[in-house]
Structures are given as structure tokens and as C-alpha cells.
Length: 70
Image 1 (cartoon, helix red, strand yellow):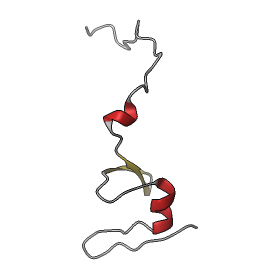
Image 2: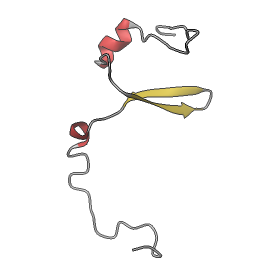
Image 3: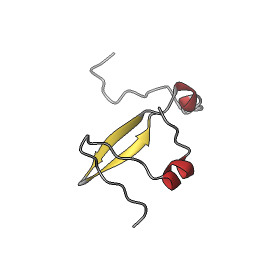
Image 4: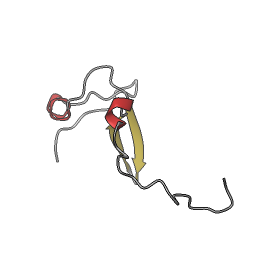
């Protein structure tokens, strides 16, 4: 098991410093919580700049999965 943290009475958790430094997380950064079974996946919300170019080269023809929509 890695680093641990305790949930406070205000339902807050401090992320251990080694985790913050390894991930490059900063104060004020926004995160999303994704339920996974009995746990949760915590990921930083990407900025538009982070997403730029993510679909480069994607095929845009015939991409609809339903024929009953425009």
C-alpha cells in the first residue's frame, strides 16, 4: 500500500506530498471524481489546451452510430 490520508470531519482529504509532486498537482487545480466499484478514481480536469490535438487525424466520415439522427 502507498501513502495514506484520513478523511476529516469536514470531509476533506490532504493529498500526500509525494503524490502531489509526482503528479505535478497544484493548489487550486480542479479534479473530477469517478466512482469505480468500492473506490474512486481522482483525476485532474483537463484544460482546453491539454485537449488540443487529441483528435488529430481522426476519421470524420461515417462516424454516426445511429441512422435515425441528423
